[in-house]
Length: 265
Ligand code: NAP
Ligand code: GCO
Image (cartoon, rainbow, N blue to C red; front, side, top):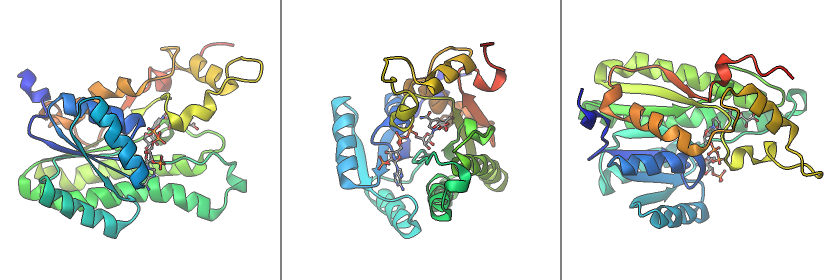
């Protein structure tokens, strides 16, 4: 066992939607492990926000404006990255949205939008990077899944369908491209404190914790919300040579939620 197997020196990592949140934390860890960081976000304002944040951390990063649901734009972006920086060694499909709406009140358009960003886009981005990974003889694709890859809950039907599908897309990329030394795995974060979950953690008018906040604390053996930093070690592992025989796996980083029935009220 050589600890250098955990290094990302000389690797080019593209993390989608990584101006902040989980994607930013993963990019920060990859930079610390030696990777060159490339990220995109949906508009220049967010890309500039990300570039400022990376600069404040002393991380050289290249940011591009790209909507990951647009196949033509993604294909052009990958070509541009290859010309300007080099072939992508590591893709993290992180960009994602959620819409919390009771299913029978959700329009088909709203359902499709979540599926488009959370499932179709990871397909589009993986399809765009795999040919060069095959030519290069290796590649790592990491899909950011979810508790909702395994569990449902009220109001997140589209998100759960997308993240469940993303788990199976992860297994299928493993099945179809594993012979080219491409490893495709998922990370399934538990409940992580980011802007996406801020509505679930808002303090109530009386200063008490949000009921959902209390629920997650009771459902999590670690008795806390996760932080984006909790995902950094697992993300480096799955991007490194240390995981070259790990394929088609979803690594849940959830403080134990999936193993636990929940604290008795
Ligand atoms: P977040 O704070 O909402 O950040 C998501 C990022 O993706 C934002 O920068 C967002 O930009 C970007 N994005 C959205 N749609 C995009 C598009 N079409 N093209 C390019 N970028 C796009 O979310 P997060 O909490 O960091 O979550 C990141 C990933 O982890 C998501 O896939 C999420 O489903 C997953 N996840 C989160 C948790 C959690 O508890 N937070 C748990 C499990 C899994 P905008 O700001 O413009 O939307
Ligand atoms: C929700 C949350 C979750 C988290 C995450 C859990 O509304 O239930 O947003 O979906 O984002 O996916 O793993």
